[in-house]
Image 1 (cartoon, rainbow over the protein chains, first blue to last red):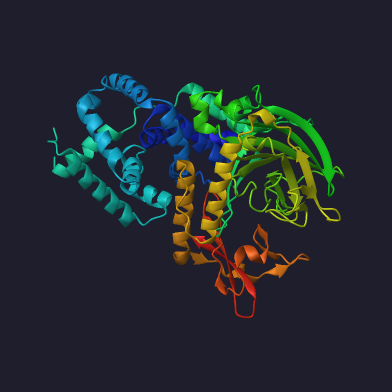
Image 2 (spheres, rainbow over the protein chains, first blue to last red):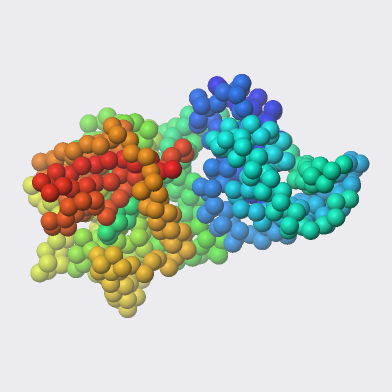
Length: 174
Length: 383
């Protein structure tokens, strides 16, 4: 795999990987860093990437590993910059654009934030499969292969994540 | 629509990503990938002394830099990704040294040093990344015969260990050195030149006593065979007749920045900590980053009993001419004095465990000694 192949990976899976990094990191500056680091790491270990076998899952698993390893760095950053405000502003912009699509408009801003906050409050064990499934749009099998756990475990964690979310949110589904 | 379908739909809508990487982000990413295709690596090591010898190695990439000239301290810091520190090396408090000396077939250049105010003047943001109470120095190492230093990805990298540490006149080098002063280093090899950026607790407070930067070979800890200490006079000197690297640079610190009271308090704490370490009764580090690392190492230690032994790694150690044990397996090469692992007459497992971690796995190296004195090393893959 060469640089051009990696460019193709960015084209094919960049959006899913970025979306996942965005949700996992919780703010844009960290998401941008994590996204870039994920692909730079992918370049280092490109011999391990099989374009025909779940490359998106591989990239997502790299992002998870990097996030875990870099938690100190992200912790530093949190202390340096008041990113929450920035994050809210970005969210608001993102959501305004999103409101243009009828389906997305179904969810109120408050509900969306509540769901995202509930997801953030989950442990990584539940949150990561949840984000892989709903944000990165991976199948159960793809998640199982990326996390190197049985499909049944992924299903069980997704189930637990949904139950926990329900409990946290306690809202009526529209 | 069932309840579960409704929830599924809600989550799908709320958690779906609507954001895409910006075009500039992808362009910058592609550029960085191209740069890294001429990749160099930097090795970071944190040195820890005491009962638990934990060597924690990380590898990360940096961009290539094609030049035959030696880098300045600032450039080395930049190459290692320490941009704030690179700025600090440009500050008025940085001391540019650029002294070169040869020893044991190598040529060493001490480029520069910065500590104290040079770091604080960078403001609050900088303090989060570099510590104003720490000292940073850059050293480069080349072979005198002109052959390149092994790249950090080469198997022979690290085979010749160097212990680079500040020493203070009048203080025992085995008690006050980079390891005991919560130090560590980053290392890169560019164009056959090895650069080491060391950091440890601030040494400016000792400026009135006389401070050296010592380099000794043959061990990754203070080597009394290479650097001598006269307990009666407090003099630290290069040991004549040592067949290897042994070198001392005088550090031209500004003696007006000495702080005897702070130094005394620091030493009191350091020596107390050392004795507590010996008793395996350390209260734990206070600095959050240190505490996190200590916790992390503790977590790794907990995983050792459930880890998977690599059967091929179980090897009896060999001994070098100086009596140190030598263990090598799959790129993991360790030379240590027996005293660092076992107390006199101790059998069974050593309390000193080394950890190595890369992107895919964490491993622990354990040594055990049987009743006949045979020391065996083994590597455990941590789950």
